[in-house]
Structures are given as C-alpha cells and as structure tokens.
Length: 40
Image (cartoon, rainbow, N blue to C red; front, top):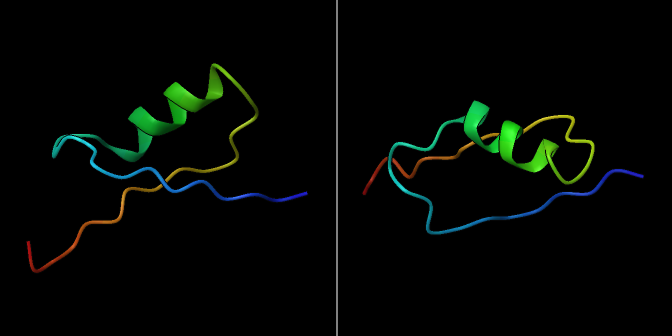
C-alpha cells in the first residue's frame, strides 16, 4: 500500500537523496522529493 509523508521546515540544502537515505534507515522508501517554493 502506498503512503506519502510530508516533512516541513527542512534546511535549505536538503536534497532528495538526503531524504531517501534518511528514511531508508527506518523503512522501504521508494522515492523522496524536496519541493521548493519558488516565491520564497
């Protein structure tokens, strides 16, 4: 079953790979993406 997790207030330099590595320590992580707000 697919699930999504929102994580806010990340440091500016956090990358998709950083999240993938972090969450892979606790569970199977199929993908991770950092969404940046263009206006901030």
